[in-house]
Image (cartoon, rainbow, N blue to C red):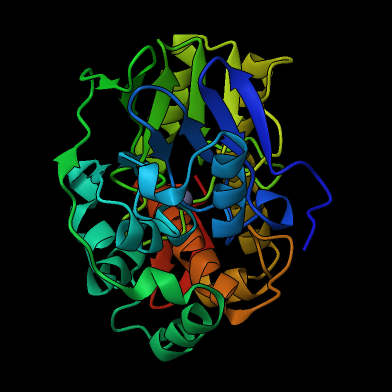
Length: 312
Ligand SMILES: [Zn+2]
């Protein structure tokens, strides 16, 4: 099927953005191809046919890929790595904090927080239907380390560990930090996502701050069709404010009688709507993280299930 937008875009010498299907929205994502001495693919979540088309246009094929860099364990980022590994004998790198969840399906389920969840089988069925390829296991051959550049030839990649979204989440600077693959600091209208058991709001906030302080000029989101160049700093600041907006909304909703995590999640409070139960799992994890923070800050208290605003 023909895509309604070009499958790839050249960003700079040797560097190509490979777009996902469905405008790179979950469960697809962008990949980045470094067509240099060492043919390198950063993330493998764009549709395999898009990856193949891009390679073909550059006189390559899947078998030529020499290294895959995975930014974190999420299904829309590790994506088609398994299929590629079946055909290319290449290195696969990730951050050590994601090893278990990148390498095995069970590890991934544990990180998602659904290994014993009431929705586990429902979740597995969805994966079977959407992304059967992410269920298989493979071996990581090397690790990303802050400050240790990945050599691709004339191009070098700079791992920037930015945990919070997930513990292993790593942005990738391209020849320094003026151009950064922002991964899931994704600048979408939805805002930050921290719907896994292993996601941590405060770490995520710190990571966004870390990227802002690097003052990049070009930000490549994993879920937007084009790199962001205009007002990138402002876009990152806006993304950052979403954490606080959600916190305020939760307080408002509790005042309005949505006084349990269940009620807040079903409203829903963070997602604009819940099209599938799958998103309810994520919503609940995110709401619960805010609720825990509000409790520890003494802004709300909890008696049994019931949440109450602390009146001072
Ligand atoms: Zn992610």
